[in-house]
Amino acid sequence: MSQDVFIAAARKAGARLVVYGGIRKMSTLVQWGEIQLLDLEAEKLLMRRTVTFRGDNDAAYRHAADFVSDQLKETMPKP
Image (cartoon, rainbow, N blue to C red; front, side):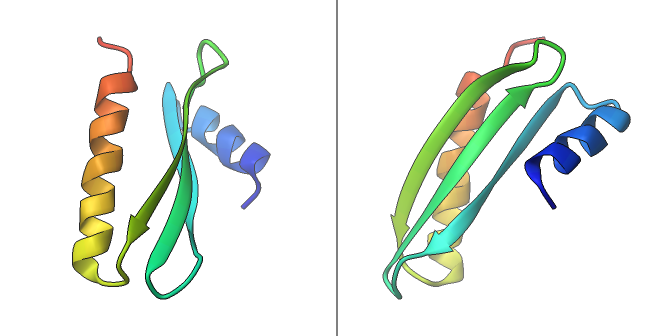
């Protein structure tokens, strides 16, 4: 799904914020990803972060997800 289609679907669903990105495998040991947080109401990019992590197992992905989650919590606007 393209970025424009994804954002249009989020708007149609009534979302205020949308998080999207992806993970790319560089090698068996190293993965990298890009995560973006958009404020759809303000039409503003709140965060664009590139992350790298080591490991190709569930624990490595969970650790990376926890890190990204913490970064998003710090960046998201407070209600």
